[in-house]
Image (cartoon, rainbow, N blue to C red; front, side, top):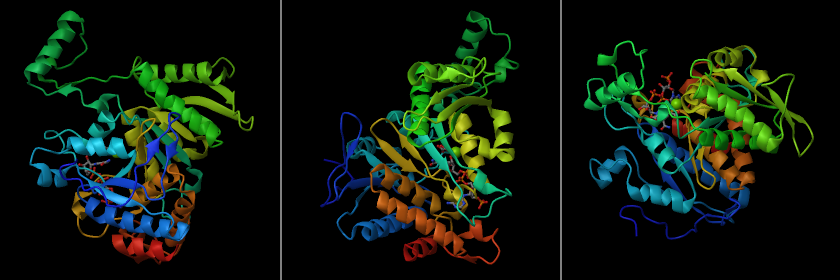
Length: 417
Ligand SMILES: NC(=O)C1=CN([C@@H]2O[C@H](COP(=O)(O)OP(=O)(O)OC[C@H]3O[C@@H](n4cnc5c(N)ncnc54)[C@H](OP(=O)(O)O)[C@@H]3O)[C@@H](O)[C@H]2O)C=CC1
Ligand SMILES: O=C(O)CCC(=O)C(=O)O
Ligand SMILES: [Mg+2]
């Protein structure tokens, strides 16, 4: 049925019920994309660690059948030089419901557009979920890194990130510019003849579905607040719209009521009657607040580009993007991936930290309901870091550490399960 994807001889598909809950067989087929750059290093280590955790947690009763699917450079080698994201890869991600991917390269300026963004857009994986937590012993630039404990809900399908833009000098850029100046009366473009131009779509619908997920997460996970992060003072109708639609949704769907004269509002968690505060922060101020007063923030709902910047900034506070996991999700499909990219200078050197990808897999196991295996991974990650046998990124900042390779860290984790 597939051209290059080999369906494992054993294993069954995960399926989705009408209420979006999952039916997970004991031997699910999980598609994975190895990834470009350091993907060749971290992906096999992630698979080894996950297999070990599952074997240990379920004594052979459960097992993942991994199925390689292709995107990026490996895909061009297999399917032909222009095929960066084969249709059958998208099909497999949809059909098998839960998958995991390594990082994929996007060139700067010219060349192909981001395959990561294409996957998110074409599968409508509108939530980018990135939890940020501290593991004891991780070297951090902060004095009290344990105070950083946030979960980012980044809108994953809209914004300037969608890549609707035209290059300076092109006929298209000129056409858009003419339309803006002649038909829309725009006078504020400083250098119209030599501007590239981009469009920033932000919708009510896109905002509402993202903020709904963030508030529901706060309710289900007993979180004290949801902060809408935006630059709505400057981009009034896009980022300001995000803020206003977010507050409105909190009131309309979750019964939130204004605090004083608003716009902050609060709702009662139906599970335990605790208050959840819905507040907002302007993005530049937010970036200094998370350094100075991180414990005031919990669940973060934000637009696509802000979410990208905030993800790496928060990751740095708890030790860097070597241990920053994530997921891209629609209501039914979930594709897990690290926050970091392909780190090309380290590619193929068995050097980088596989922690982000392993923790992304831990999120995947939890999403599948395999909590015992997920718990083993978290416990082993904590123990391994405390043992100070760590990859270069931590070793260079830790006193008395023994530097291990990428695969070496995987072995340490398996030993510590
Ligand atoms: N979702 C995805 O697939 C993503 C893809 N990308 C793409 O990746 C490519 C490279 O992007 P770039 O901006 O260099 O960002 P990267 O995230 O790839 O790397 C930036 C720096 O982060 C550190 N780092 C990255 N990965 C690890 C790891 N596993 N362990 C420890 N440290 C790590 C390294 O720091 P140091 O130098 O200090 O050692 C590295 O130089 C680009 O093409 C970009 O578009 C980027 C982000 C996400
Ligand atoms: O798609 C890319 O190359 C970069 C994406 C990215 O940085 C992110 O999603 O965090
Ligand atoms: Mg990023």
